Image (cartoon, rainbow, N blue to C red; front, top):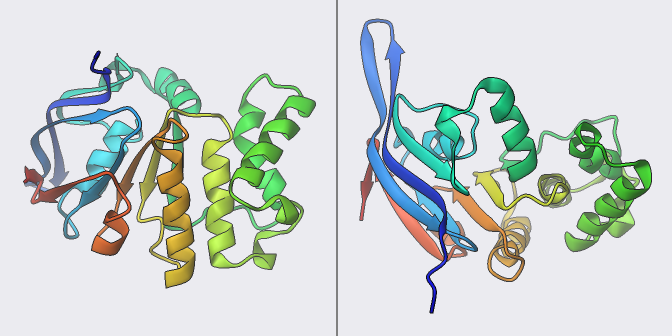
Length: 227
């Protein structure tokens, strides 16, 4: 049986921030691999480096040293223009704050990433309707964010992350602003995206109940992996 190539390979990754004359180590020589189809949760206290690691893997931050290969591409070597194109094509983002535009409907919010592509309006509509159906919001596509519950807003945000069909979905505390029932729904949706749907999901959380939805958890403490 062939062992699939990992979708993410991180080697000796370090990130150091300068705060005046003081240097703060956010990540210290991190190495790990993430398999395609995993739902990996990153846990640790505030300041442990989990969000920094997530942002480097997603191409929104750069390390001080080390390698980060995603689908064989070392994202640390891309220039800003190449990195922006790579993110648009390969990564879907879900955040604690839903980041929906208040004056746009659910449909229009989900369509936004597709406006950066060459797709025609008919193809955009098909893709938007497909992902809104996937997250169970076909009947809310013409609603504004203020007409939706928090859980529904986060599901719209997940649909927006999926509309470009990325291989990698990254989620930073996606249930932090949700009540328990909505959180369960969102976590179940993220779980269904991994192996059954072929996506790789990486989620930052401090909540053990949320982490239990993942297929594997890793812990960070002061910028280092702990087992």
